[in-house]
Image (cartoon, rainbow, N blue to C red; front, side, top):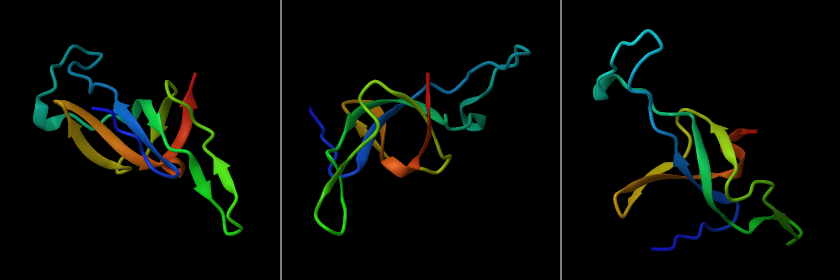
Length: 95
């Protein structure tokens, strides 16, 4: 299934949560924190300003990004989990 976000929204595939700490302690599923990093899988065309001009999104497919803990809406498509969020929910691009 192909999913295309509208306007200034992006679709992010969250990174996998850590299962073992650096000290070797195994983290159970109930104690795992949501990852705050992910890879962009799709982007919208951009935001339209008050004058009707299209402002393109600065992010692109394939960018690894950092985002807020409660950013976006979680969705599941064909067994895979994704987040749909606005461009301004992204804090930084990880290079």
